[in-house]
Image (tube, rainbow, N blue to C red; front, side):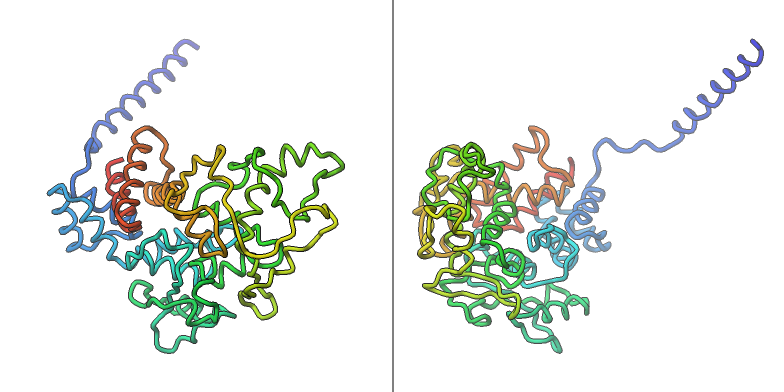
Length: 393
């Protein structure tokens, strides 16, 4: 028994020695990647493909010259940055399931075009802007179907070169003053203005552009006077549920959702409907839930988060905090510190493959956010600075 046990032990030790020897024969990985390795990693993260030999040489030389941001800008000239990275980056924002696996649409194309052309990204929720494909044989853009973008999708059109900027008002019939960037695209309307009460549009705009869902911004200290009639003040016969839960979202959300009072999505005509001066019927449903609740008369809105705990979202002092319609509400949301921070967080996740998760990450994200705001809300700059940081982290 002793001999057998010793044999097994010797065998295990011999195996361990051989394994260690084999490990010792493996080449040691460098502690710090060189310019070539850094360039490859940066290009893969930004464009989704390795660089060509000539591009690698250019990027590596720039990194060696301590100009990694210029190297990142070169990587973003690759079509993969637009056709893959940016598309996957924005596609989840276009649907309720937040899935990246959706066809190309006017929302996604417009964001890709804005980033490509360095359009100030704080206008994404308010501008009269739309991007379409300048492609022979493609169906004309229509506000009632997605055929134009399906053609681009199905034919593998290079979005970097094909997209051209135009206006929503010139193609949809909606007045320029009523357009609100991606909020009034056909894809967003179909996803978030359809049926319901238009609260979905506000909620998903908060998720996608301020990185906060409604439970995260609940505040039961706001006055409830503009909560609509459809919200029961005693759910299940218990008013405490309203006072400690429902009011936390609705007291601030309902006054802001009023900005969308003239918008609806018609599932029969398959397009956005805008009725200036006429509040949509969905704002007056379930009036019996609380007849003394607020009756929406128009599209005036007010941001009641400018005071209280959600003042920490960093609302702009240069904006009034109230107004009429979706455009001015989009400007209010995109003018916040939370908006700028959110875009950087999303880019960090996309390029670094993790959220900012330690002190160094958070410090880098804060600096990139500051540069984003002071640099004219240039999203390519955010991608470049993030790629430089993640190149060695």
